[in-house]
Image (cartoon, rainbow, N blue to C red; front, side, top):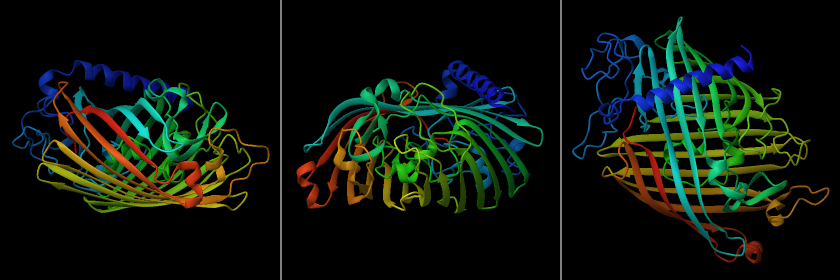
Length: 476
C-alpha cells in the first residue's frame, strides 16, 4: 500500500466518523460508554446488556451503558478492558502507546452498520503570566481532536485514525511563553523560553491487529504522520497530565516524536508484555504547521511495554533520531526513555500518576542531557481535579541566546539543571450540552543556579488561568 492510498483510506474513514458523530441522536451521546455494534439486535447503541462470552472476542463484547454515580457523572471505576490485549485493541491514545486499563478516556463511542467509531479530544483556552526578565504573557489556545473508525477485516481488525490540532491558528508568533523551555525553531531562530505549536495534522494512521488467540496479538501500524514506539504516551494524551495545559520541559528528551513522519511499527503482544519496532523520519516538523511533511525512513526505535495489572503500565524504549533539529542538520541523537504509569479508580473520581525519564546523547559531540518528571492528577467528588508536576531537566547554553539567532560555529554545552514545581486545580460545570467544561488555574515555581539570576530573576514564577472543554463522560 503506497502513501497516497493510505492517506485516502484514512481520510475516508475519518469523514465517515465525523459525519456519523454529527448524526448521533442526542440520547446516544448522553450516556457514552464502551459500545461496539450490537450484533444480535442490530441497533446502533444497545440498551440491553448482552451475555458476555470471551471478553476479548469482538463479536461477543458486552454492550451495557456505563454505570453512573448519584450526580449523573460516569462511574470511572467500572468496565475496564479485562486484558492488556483488550486495552491495545481500543487504540484510544496516540500511536501505539498503551496506558493502564484503569484510566478513563473521555470520548463518544457509537456504531454504524459494522463500523465502530470514536470521537474525542480537548480544547484549552489559556492566559499565561510569567515573572522575571524573560517572563512573557500571552492569551492562546491549544487543542487536539481525534476521530477513529474500526471494522473487522479478515482474521483481524482494521482501524483508521486521524488527529488534528488547531494550534497553528490558536497560537500566534509560532510559540507560547514557557520559561526554560527549548526545542525547534520559530522564524529561523531556536525557540528559547517558549513552546512550539503542534501541527494541524498530528496523526494520520492505519492499524491492523491480528488476534492469534486470547493472549497473542500481532499489530501493524502505518502513518504518514504518527507516533513511533519511542517514549511514554505523549504529554497531551497522558491521563496524569489531563488537566495541565502546558508542555513538559523534558518534551524533547521524552516524547517529542509523537508527531513524526513516515512511521511504520510492528508489534507483538503476549499476555501483559508487548515488543515493538519502528522506522520513521527523524527530522522534527518544520515551521509550516498546516502542511504534511515527508521524508525518508532514516530513524528507528524499539520499545518494551509491560502492563501486569489494570493499574500499572511501564515502558522502556531506545531509538536513534537522524538529524532531528533543523539548525543542526549533521547531528544525530540517541534517545533512551523509561516510564511507569499508575491509575486507580476511586469513588466519584480517579487518580493517575506517571514517572518519566528521558535522555538524549549527541552522536556527534557525545553531549548528554537528562530529564526527570513526576506528575499526578486526582479527579475527586465528580467535578473537581487537582494535579502536580515536578521536573528536573538539563539545559545547555542555548538558554543564554534568548530570542537571538545562533552565532556561527555555535556548540551546545551543558549549562545548568532546572527544576519546575507545578500545582493546579479546576472545577467542572455544565455550560455546553454533551461537553465537560472546567475553569482552572495553576502556578509553576522554578529552581535554577544563582548564575542565571541576572537572566531570569531570583524567583521566576508562571501562572496560567484556563477554560478546558472536552466530550462529557468516560469510556473504558
